[in-house]
Image 1 (cartoon, rainbow over the protein chains, first blue to last red):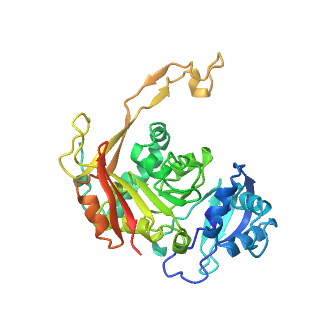
Image 2: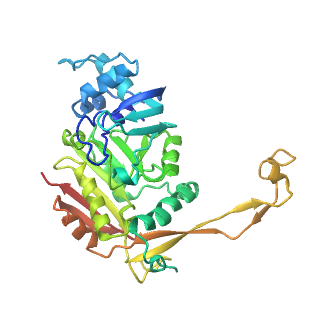
Image 3: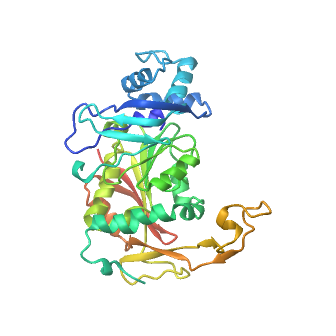
Length: 121
Length: 253
């Protein structure tokens, strides 16, 4: 799971409406899959990211390439950092935990399982 | 051809679990090997999306549409863990989820200036009109106002040269999976043959394994009506292509 994908995920357990984003990644094993760097592409992604969620998730995973606040001036260095963190860094193993209701979504072999049990729907 | 009438009394969730979810997990590898060529309407829809657009492929199967346009971010998802595993092997990013409960933050898509979702050959697997409409509403929920949704479903009206003929809308469609086993006592039973080639053991042909997939075959106009019934969209385009009905929807503000 790329971190850009994580940036879009929200807990969808029935009745879980507060503190359901972002999911906290725990017990993570990371991997990197290189992708072609396209500055224009990354620039267009910026307004679609929840910056706080991306920043804090990255920090929780030991990645400190991003500034806490989105700088006003977008440099190529920043675009490269976003590219590396959001598009190339993947969670291979671990779990995504909802801080609102405690639901655990397992991540195995790079794949998050977002299915719920019948009683959670 | 057997029909879901045989499964009368089954809840739609059970029918889908048995005759959609379980079957795709069983046939995933063979299914994937037969799904590589993008359909032209889907291909051009994806290529028309602007640089940096974010899109969801709900029911992405083996991921054949996840890499069509490298200038967009695709979020792939499927109900079949086996098919999502195939996406992963191909280097794509996909997740296991239910098409009636997509785990995306709605605002993620609202923030976009251009956004879209596709659902190709998926919604015909939901077993009631309510669940099919719900699946369409869920696609519309995750795209921003003005964003577009492309949906393909199988048509009851199959082209004349098609092998398939259906006389009712709710049917089981068999998936025949060729099954080869090594002859009993042959080298294959213990792994590679003595000469070192994996396929040297005499293969014995057994009857094909047949799995029944549930389909609701859409009639002309049915998909459009179902989409409009959500009250969430207008129709940008609709048509018929290669035994399928399709529709392109625009999300209302």
